[in-house]
Amino acid sequence: MSHTMNAIVDVQSADYHNNIYHRYTTLRDQHPVYFDANRNIWMITRYDDVRGLLRHPEGTLNAETGHSYIPSLATTDGELHNTIRKEIIPEFSRGVVEKLTPLVNSIVDELFADLPATGEIDIYKKVILRLPQLFMTRFLGFPESQADQWYEIGEILMGTDPDSNEQATPEVALKVLDDFAAMIEQVLEQKRSEPGDDHLSWLVGREAEGALTPEETRIFANCLGFAGVDTTINLLGNGTGLLARFPEQRRKLITQPTLLDGAIEEVLRVEPPVQGLPRRLTQDLELHGTVVPSGSEISLVFAAANHDPSHYPKPEQFDIERSNKDQLGLGFGLHKCIGQHIARLEARAYFTKLLERYPDYEIIESRWRLSHWARGYAALKIRA
Image 1: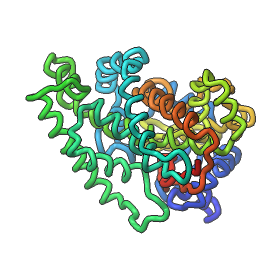
Image 2: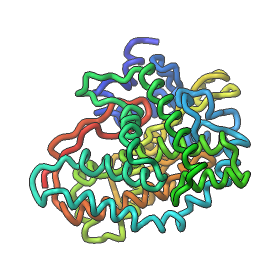
Image 3: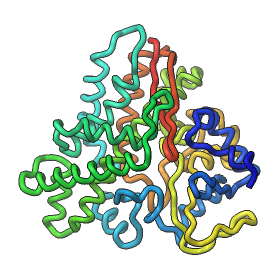
Image 4: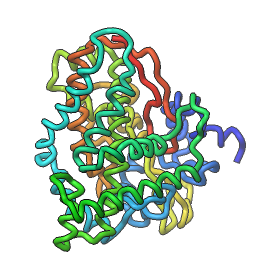
């Protein structure tokens, strides 16, 4: 494979992340089944292919991929995955989650109360990072004393800041993840002897009733601990960037607040917080004349699929009134994101308050993180 082919994808380069959707266009048009030799993974980028593999996951496994170093819902399959989802999904239905609105609103009010009316504001550090962190800490019943260690782990998982000298090596990441798994285990142990009125206590309660095994409890707690924070941070940040880049859409949203739900879906389509997820093939996969051998790792690139012009006309246009309910930003099918209603709830509260307080904000500093799976800012500052 020539060097130029390899240069299409380089997840360690800032230039790649600054031009990621151009790169996806090249992949979709010229290499719809692309082998990224640096990561030893095949990237699938067309909408119909990605959705098809999500709809019919036979022949693919979520376990034993580059994401499986810590057991969570996204890395489980079969019976185990079904049991956990069956027990958990009712707790995360839209109706149940909406009861959390007052908690989310109070955190949003608390964070914005500390901000000046005008001037330069580090919206990323002051609000975007903090809202999902504080919400999940309180919702899960995580000890505030350990929360900072947890947040730090999220930072490492999301990727690295190109301006920082610290490049998280896989070894460092694994050590951090082990520490996190141990911390979750310790908190669950604490809840078993002293339950509170929180979600982790509810989980160990279901375990005590025999509905979940300790392994299942741990897997789900890990899932919430990781996915519940990082992806929502990216959703809030990415939406803040898009509303600034498309001021006419922002004005439309300010004058017609009922368009907010559609606007959040469009953020998930245009800048999905999770760009794609890996699967391991258990049989050969033939697509577009390429045979990907059984045992290979593939990446279903949701973000590239969401920008496929054969599915979404003018895909680069951020259009809050677009019909976009079938965007793949939260996955699809069996592995559709279980916390999707929580993410939307936080996004609704945040964007409502942001536009109310700073309707004409502009972005004065922004940098994308370098990440092999996430799309999010390492820095985002606004002038109000």
